Length: 554
Image (tube, helix red, strand yellow):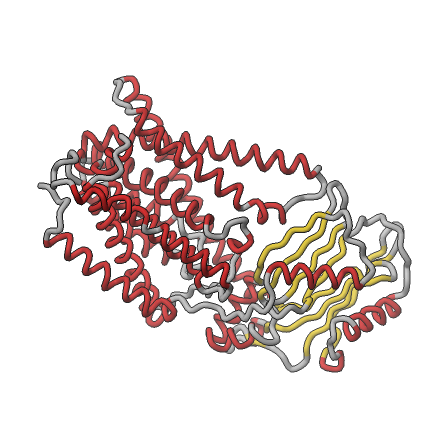
């Protein structure tokens, strides 16, 4: 039966997809409330503020390499959202509680000495750290004198009214050539209780700390300190998610081994289509390299100065190429194995993908695969919106709110990041979890429901490392979605699932750009959304063909 036509089934999918997309548009904010951030300074302005701060302290930054990222005190953000609710937490994070910040760093290759300055969204310096060698010569002054220096800094430079604070910590560390001191103050009458029914659970407090290196202030910070019990519980809960993710990774590794075995066996039978596998593998290779190159500004921030900068660059380049080759090889033999098995078990599920690998892009099958892919993707967007809307309201599901700014804003081309990530995820995850796994399990277990459920669950619980609580919620959400994707793979074709996956990820990752309030980033987000429609546009010329003209129906 040829389904590459606007029949009743296709129209129903489109209508349902559009209805669920409308749900996504109208209810997204309720299901996934975002943190409110008034970003008054751009990335370059934050660097300028940080640079001027250091120069005013007498530091010379000439010869230093600069790097920057946008960061968040994740523990503090989660704590406030859980204890205060989103509206109150937004008010606090947008006011006196420093949570979001530009992180600026200056370093020299091979040297311990470096500078880090955090600038809040309003353009105020909230943290500063001057790292120096432990054996660097300096003064050894009494703790009382060091505290006086710290107080002068907080009042004169940081602009704090210390009458509103009480000192809670003071320590001295004697080194071989100097003495370093640390002091910490807590804002009076500001405490956020962790558990109302447990006074021993602790409270969140606003702190101001100063480090004195010898007889000079070498660091300070204003920050929100979460109670230790909360930190332990949050870490313990996150570790459970990590465990689920590791289990999924092990099962995914076993899937890769199975794909390699099938590849070898099918190769011996001369049943491997190299062109089919190579096209997918090369797409992964190019996409991974583009992603790595575009993300270098973020990678640079993590440079360790105990190695040469040239060595670091070399390692990063080598890692990118090795990673790309391994990723390419994985998809090559997984795709080749999946192709061989699918031709045997679900021959109709190749459809537009088979034609695409043959260089036939503008086909009727490709157009209808895209149409169904968008319908499935739109349905998924609405589905997860309803899932978390109900989960938040009735089932105690908690997902920390994300701000409209993320580190993708720090890449060379912000619009390229969502596209490369979406393309890599769509091809690799659909090749492994649908194309190979479903065909493999159907071939050897014979039971369709198991062939659908097992790879869906493995794929789903691999996302348990995301900050969603309880940690098994994402696994449940995506197992259901994975089964639906599998049904569409069997009933239609692989390209339908790839287009759906690509559109979903592109839209989700582009959202921070669209909500940033910055014209450049908004335009970048619009570019992403426009390019997400490319599969549909590529298929439009295929409508001129009569149904059945372009080969096997999908």
